[in-house]
Image 1 (cartoon, rainbow, N blue to C red):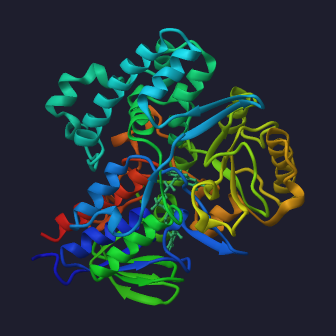
Image 2: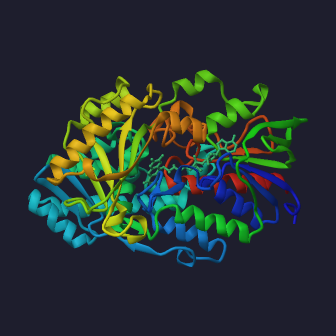
Length: 493
Ligand SMILES: Cc1cc2nc3c(=O)[nH]c(=O)nc-3n(C[C@H](O)[C@H](O)[C@H](O)COP(=O)(O)OP(=O)(O)OC[C@H]3O[C@@H](n4cnc5c(N)ncnc54)[C@H](O)[C@@H]3O)c2cc1C
């Protein structure tokens, strides 16, 4: 087999790096994953402190089929590694202290909920979901698992005949408005695309496939936390013979005759017949690849629309907190104003929306008995000046809002607290401007228009991760690792 005995360096052990490593090792490559941090998982790492177990990044497990498909490639199932539970309600949206919309896992219950809010909306939702299902199925079959080197890759029979139904040129917000009048239903239907890092008026309605994923396929949770997924991929990679160098930062790729031949790291220089750059694309392209071999220049990156960064608080509370469920979206302030403070006129938001994840509502493993594990996330513009006093100001604001909503004292019961923001994203992941979720999935940053999976000047270096195709989020990052591995394997033939 041509790939046998090729030395491949994978830079980064996030979802994309772990996926790439598994596919390359399966074909017989000698794969080493170089990871600058001391644990695998990248943005999906976890930490343990004072009896609490905090997922540091992702908390929503959507699109379970993508994970099943990944493990099936290796003759495995997610359940070989972790236990999944379906959340019901999947999440709740909080529009005011007494204005809460819990979103049931059962579709009939969801239709009834819609109808109780807006007459006729159950039928509208059925139509919306049917269209979303069509987009999801065609998307997964014909759009997502493509390296996006050319638009022709997407010209399949189903895409061409169903082109109009894919709603690529319509905005998500215009699309949602065609179906629903009630402001809360509109917010509920627009919320899933916020994962794609831009406002619904900038996101193609193609992504209503996310509604199908969220509302029909459901919101799941791996017991012991989301880090169970990268831990599972790490275990699989080791079963496949992948070698890991942790606490090992790649500094440079060494080039001979337009090919990478070695990687220079904080632990020394290692041979490499091929490289998958699965750390932040901008960092690999601008700091690890020598200037004459870069895909893009600094100006290109400055002009890109980045998804938000975020200010996170990991909080341990020594009692149970009322009125919160596993996933809580606080949409009780002005969404338009906050979004302008992220995208149009980047600044610290005055009165932000926020998200509170309380996995201890589902899982007794993540907090000591009788206590609560609370993860707070406030989306903010990337590149803002991040300081301790600013973080503290927001901590005070959010705890106050939580106390008001729950009607319960929280501040005095906090026994563990850690904040995480732009400076940490830069320091821990080499993230450009401290971005959290990569590039926004706007129309002009979709597919072929995204930073390319392939280095155009080096035949054996491919990029993976949330800044290239198919995009941000756990399932797409994982898929990008597969795509990069497949392309690199072709060069070994
Ligand atoms: C707070 C937060 C919440 C999120 N919530 C969700 C969610 O609920 N659902 C969802 O689907 N997605 C979510 N996402 C997005 C998702 O987590 C990411 O898209 C995905 O994890 C990115 O994976 P990746 O492999 O591209 O990058 P990363 O996870 O960043 O992995 C890259 C790795 O490369 C390493 N690295 C960088 N430079 C070097 C170097 N020079 N040498 C060696 N190693 C290097 C980094 O340390 C890192 O470990 C969230 C992200 C964040 C930050």
